[in-house]
Each structure stands twice: as C-alpha cells, then as structure tokens.
Image (cartoon, rainbow, N blue to C red):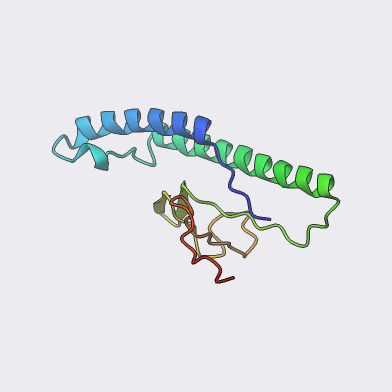
Length: 136
C-alpha cells in the first residue's frame, strides 16, 4: 500500500509565514533580487526558528502517516512487511546546504537522522494515468 499524506494546511501556513519573513530579508539585504528568490538567512534567529518549525511539522506529518498506515493494517488484518517513509515537498539539509524539495524525493540514504536507507520515488499521477486500454 502506498499513500500520499502531507501537511497541506499547516505546511501551507508555515510556507506563507516563511515567505513573508524571507521577503523582508530580501527587501532589506538585496532589493534587486527577484521576489521568487527571497530567502531567510539560516543562521539568523528567524532562520533558526523557521528550521525548528519545519522539523516540528515534519515529525507531525510522519506520525500521521504512520498512524494512517497502522489503522489500515489493523482494519484489514494485514501484515506490514516493510514501512518506507520518504520526504517530498520539503526543505532538506545536507551539510551546509539546504534543498527545497518541492515535488522531489531525496535519493540519498542519509538525508535525515531517521532515514532508513530506503526511498520510494513515486510516479506523478496528478494528471491521471494514460495507460493503454486492454485489448480484451
């Protein structure tokens, strides 16, 4: 079973608040930079607070994902042979670099402290499936 579960409501609110902060930094530090390129300095109080909020939201989303799967396992009396959690639409940190993974899934096994070494990279089905109809 593969499910897509996220934090669209809370995540969207956090993103919007973060973009307002980023825009204030852009205006103060580099007004010629495009609005779409606004940023929050990672070592600022605002940057540290934003990172902490992202991590809280990440833990909340992961817990909800696990709860959803557990309910299905119990309701169907199935046996879970493996559980793979993968991140997408998120900010990931690797060394001193931050990656804004909108629509992307990390393909390295140590992208987070709790990464299990397995990553599932799903197909994009937002446009629907265009599979050929059966000939029978």
